[in-house]
Image (cartoon, rainbow, N blue to C red; front, side):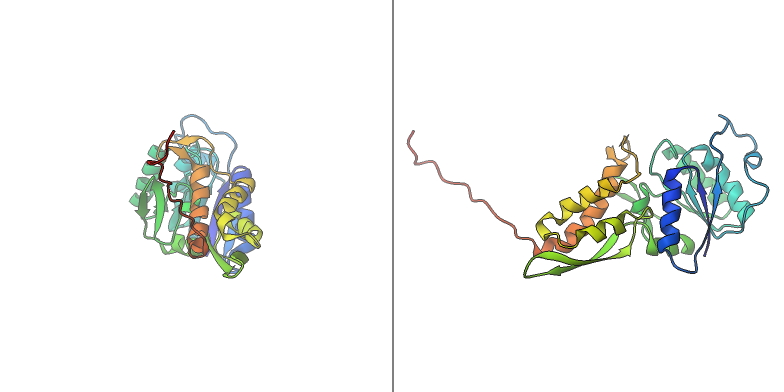
Length: 256
């Protein structure tokens, strides 16, 4: 699969580095460094694009400026791309209204589009849109990408006798590489502490999702991202955890 990643800063560079280091050998990942600044109104998107863009099947919109979304239909046409992945890890880079418009613009020219919020809420069939809401998409190219990168899925091996994690593989990494980072450091951690430790490791990586309160979640996208990874870990260690119940004492007969 041929991919064109649009980057403008550290956010996109980290994603591309992880994709190239750990993605399938037959993936071809090219990049375009978008301009650092744009006018308030873009009348002619083609004026802000290079003379030639390489052919691509999937566009990865990792830019850090909302104006880049306005260029994506023209980029899709120029590259022949059949799908666009435009994550929302920061509302300032892709506001919800513009994300909705982008999906419509691309649908009009027959190009599939997914706008996962955050990026690590992407699966092979759906993506997170807001609290308790997942949106479906239909694109074999985005699905192929999501088989390897998106909503983190670890493969934990747990010693039942010691109740510790003895091995940790990665079924699906976060695009930024955070899930792989966490998995490598969970080995030797007890099951009772694994979820909390995964959350701390996620934050220390660090996650590049926004730390501002997102209106669709009522929480930061950084926390939403961390919870997706913690939930995966907690689900796997759940059968091995020891749950202690407290029985309230009876004090009715006590004299004061």
